[in-house]
Image 1 (cartoon, one colour):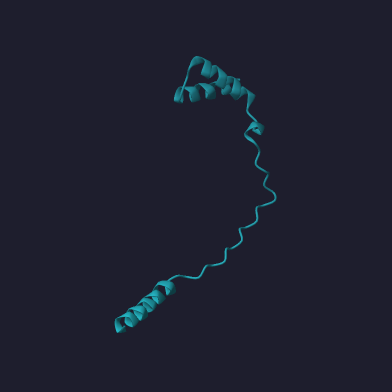
Image 2 (cartoon, one colour):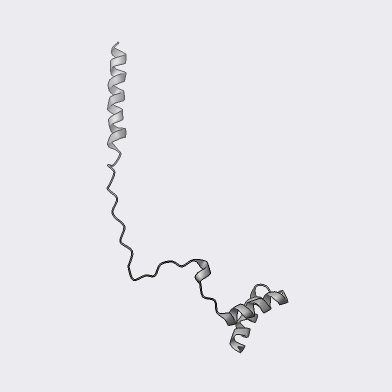
Length: 81
């Protein structure tokens, strides 16, 4: 009986350390309001594409260019137009 009481008291004593080590929940700070001057995100279809670059890109794809060759061709093609 004495051992049971001592074990119970020890369990309660040790649990105080476990619960005492936790920090209280801090209230969430409100996020800063978004700037009203920034435009709303536009869908990808609304992005304006340079028609010269689009045409040069089509030509590069038709030639089968990839990577650096593709970039170089498109860059030179746009400058030439």
